[in-house]
Length: 468
Image (cartoon, rainbow, N blue to C red; front, top):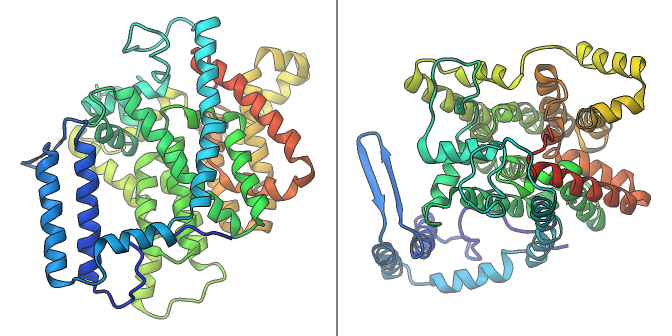
């Protein structure tokens, strides 16, 4: 079994290598990567308070990288940085996992995009549509639904007119738009394609982490099948769009993996990212709390308590940072929460969710419900599947996995009914790990059904027909 190494710096075969050497090596490689990225783009410009920072010259950044490398080797020559890089490439990267992730992306993310292109060219788009940046409708393929909001924030920042009942950008969290803004600096202003690159890259990076996480519970084949099931899921169409599903999957998988491997600082960083990506990212604190203490030795020192507390607090910290920003900017930090009402998210309760559908089916029949409200039926099925698996997942994978499913499904179900529940469940990797183990004899037909429905979802999504 090949297991990928997940570190913030280069792995080191020399355990006594000083920390400052590892830090300089990581800084040098970061500067080299930045210099390469600056070649096709127009640089990065941002402000930290009154200080404006501009990084636009690839040559200047490369010169700084050379100075760092020279200083490092002047004081510490062995092992040299090139040797460490070669060693890392040989032993630190699981090439099997990289090839597997590449296969998953090509086999499951590209086909929905091609289906979308064919659907737009043959069926056409439903009118009216949102903002479209290009004259050619095929070039506008990534400019769909919420992607317009994310790119608007990346380009112009947040706006709020004081009315939370009108759809506005303040309900969308800043993690994804910030990444779009950064990548767009290297793509010549093509915001929607920058958003697409961020979303697809995040999904690709999440695959090896999900695979490693699944190996903690399953054999090699079943672990791989769990990834195929997730990537083929009907609502996995959102992984092929400029949406937050890819980044959030990356963050949540990374948190769980880091907690399993007791890398609490890494878990805290990924937890903070999750809290900045989506409003419900803060709820990751609950399963992280379970992971930190369930069947684990009780902390005996203040330092150990702090190490465990960091990843628990980090997702909440991400939400609080955005709340603080909104307070400074608009005088009300919780406008992101109040603004959910504009998208129909108000407390209704599970009893109303169930009663509405049962009464409709009783009065008109299931076939009429299927024909009248097919999208509601699909989203309701996704929600019921997730809720029904909370207990089995908790028993088989552990209470933290069941808690993740519960906290990601129940709040939106209480606040908005079946709206977007398919999208919400697409990132719940415990469901697919459990399915990979329990449906061994039926994996192929399940994958066929999943992939077929995802193709249907791609047609709806890319032709501007409601999928939520």
